[in-house]
Length: 178
Image (cartoon, rainbow, N blue to C red; front, side, top):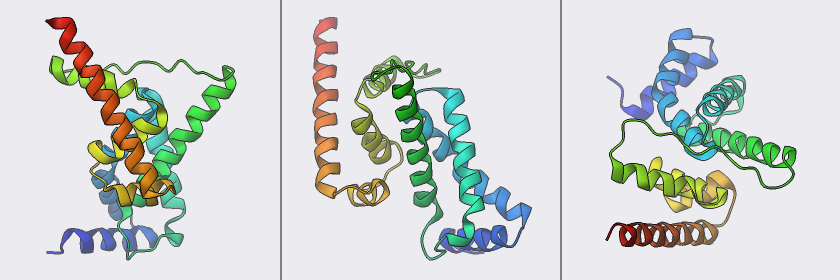
């Protein structure tokens, strides 16, 4: 049995050679996180589905350029995040600057989690993206910087400000219940 990194490299080699079963294995392995990342960033289920699918198609079309020594997930997530940002930029242009994005509708989550998800949805796009990558997908600040092409200091700054904003939102929410 191959380790996770070796198994992934084997799937990539197979997919590059046209193996449908290896392509399917890559898809099954990476779809949930790619879709979740898109959903958390764009806040629209249908758009997230489209973005994740388009990102997979783009990744598959460009597998010949993929460096097999590196993990597939971060490469795919970079494509997903870039597609999310492209969509949100387009929406903002179409409505003249400030798009009123649809609020996330989360289902089957405890009320405390719902409040946190609503607070994350209220963050600015730049802060939401780094929070999703850090806490939703588990990337390190260094990896986030590489993924987004920004300095690690910028990543840390956005994370710190996002957490401050979330804490302040939580304190207001707690005070309202008292």
